[in-house]
Amino acid sequence: MASAAAAPAFPARPPEALFEPARSRGLDAPVSLIETARLMRQNPMAILPEALFEVPRLTGPYLGRKVHEIAGPEHMQSVLQDNVQAWRKSPLILRMLTPILGDSILTAHGESWRRQRRILQPAFTRRRIEHFAPLMADAGVEAAERLLASDGPAEVHGVMNDTTFRVIEQALFGEVDGFDRTRVRAAIEVLLEEIGRVRLSDLAPWPEWTPRYMTPGALKARHVFRKAADGQIARRRASDEPGEDLLGLLLSARDADTGAALTDREIRDTLMTFIAAGHETTAIALTWALYLVAHDSECQDALRAEADAVCGARTPDAEAAGRLVLTRQVIEEAMRLFPPAPILGRRAVSDTDICGHPVRKGDVVLLAFYCLHRHRTLWDHPGRFDPDRFSPERRPRHPFQFMPFGGGPRACIGTRFAMQEAVLVLSAIVSRAIIAPAHGEVEPVMQVTLRPKGGMPLRFEAR
Image 1 (cartoon, rainbow, N blue to C red):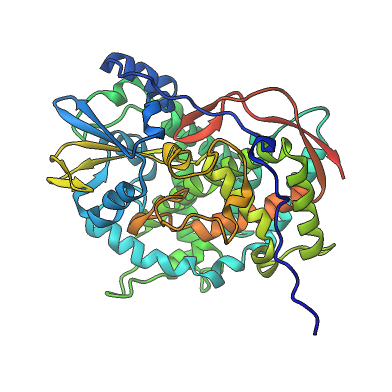
Image 2 (cartoon, rainbow, N blue to C red):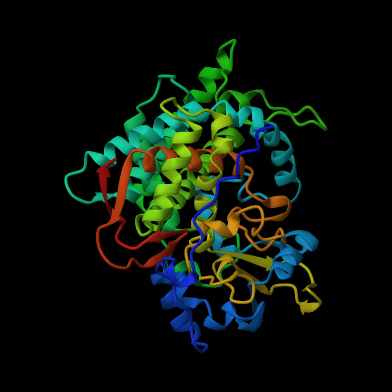
């Protein structure tokens, strides 16, 4: 009887042969509140203490309360799962997100969040997500063609943004007409830039209900998007068939407990949330993944061999995406080294604790996923690019050690969608192109997501 084929694996290499990418260095000593505000405005990554890569928790004073910076799996679980009712998103994050996203699943709390989660969850079942695999694969092929057509180094981040926007736009709205896609896309880019810009006024301890200043351009862009979304919602409601895209699913969705539907305003805010969260974060993950494989030719060879074996000349479907095991490991390792959301903030709404350490109402916790993912007590050679660490034999066992999509009941609802998209797009590009660096080191900077400062130029040559 023939033996079973061996599971795909990356070539075994000593740690010193693995690529060590750019990293954000933390503070060696505490700084004043004024200096903290200055660093936050420039790059929030700069406020992370270097010691947090060695210990699971650090606590210090903060405006009469305390700030707890955590980077341990058990500590993450304590905040995001075990004591989740004692915490809510930080006022800073809510002040930045709510003017754009409204009371959506990303910003809502309490019963509003629970009701939205119940209604939205059925739209993200495996069967629903698999339906979008051909769209994602086609977008990956188009991205590869654009990168290969570049005269000189290609600016990867921009192409990945265009690619993931095309996917989320088609997944949300299908092929329907009725609005100016170019104008709406430009408006969304303005709104994403508005979300990512930290102002000094954002760092002041205003009450949570204090409105945030928005530029005239951002206000106009918000009006453009809301008008287009409201028009699509009204048009679908007037038709007999809501459609098979995500907008149609949102219109058809009902609360399993009460039978209630989402309001038009909730659907509109959800559409903006899906675009902001599902477009930018996946583009960032792909950008960093391409940066990493550009510096590792053996990894590229393994990914091409896998694509040839799994897909051949045909367009991959959802079943093929599930068998692109090595490609998925690269995406996971890219999100370990460069988590799209590297830091999250929470504020205690009642007295609680973090792994037995007392926390008072009003205290703030910073969940430093960036430090967690590079923690020297949790990972072997944490600064090295080693996709094999996500093989079945080596991947982390604690569910809160690797958290690119958050954790607990508020973990990202679109995880399956994002991973399927990232795997299919990366495989399409690497199977068609030889990728090489275009310059030296890059600097990771946080603008809500963790982006490469100044973009990500790479060289692409047809295979």
